[in-house]
Length: 391
Image (cartoon, rainbow, N blue to C red):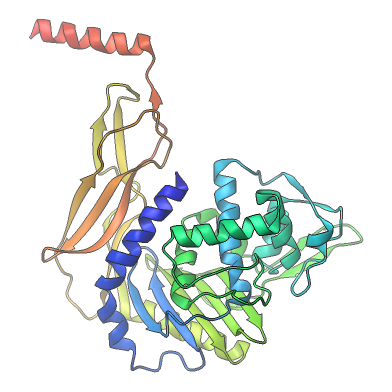
């Protein structure tokens, strides 16, 4: 289900949202918001609006920002129940042999999925990334195949992975735009920020092998509202960062690739985020916690199925502009299939301004809908019959 929803969202994002926001990006193309970055993007997650781009589709090595996709597949596996946070993962010789950033896993060592998540999200552990790849897909190669399949599902035409770590490899590349889309998809799993926003922690605490984790993204500690997401560096890629920060009902995703050094990379990220939060404000049209429609399904339990937006329905406007009139329109899907999982895609909430669609949010179920039993269906039919007879 998540794969289907992700695919639908990606198609919308690429074909609907991006064209509708070109004017924002073009307006700032001549400004000097980023100084060092070879490529950069600023995207607001909730509205999907692109606020800035610089060489956004230029294929570049993403270094350890690759792990955004690795984390995405891990979070999806957790969601489907394929793995559990407290499950112990045994480390192979291959995983333990990874160079670069690592948490110094040893062959045969066992560590929980949650600890591995910390090792990847905080310390950018290549060994932890490969260990999780092998646990989920059986081998690193099979996991990489899944990464590329997911990239294809998201409509990413300028991304190809050769490993789950970002270590240098021929034909391993992505773009600032594609990294922003991946980050947006990852952040749909809100619990991932429980790990990406950690500044420091410990693994193997209280043992002789105790390991101090310190986040490779130092802005976690200094930039207000930052909750991730992933740094990257190789001599070829130079200094990269996909950053996530929330403030005033907005969730900004800033991507910088190919900066000269960490200081300049962080300065570019800060400049992008300051621009987004300083120039724009969110207009919330509908809360994700308030049902927008109810459909009746006689075979369902419950019979009345409430439909909610997948997230707050939000649009952005510049702070110096008047608030425009927006209309929301529900575009529901066709036949209902019972049973239904929580989060089943049921259609779209379309936001329109002056008759033009400017944003779109998935419409979904908030609760599981089971199939009513034969007895329940009989009782409903009897009540309907007796009500009709009294009428």
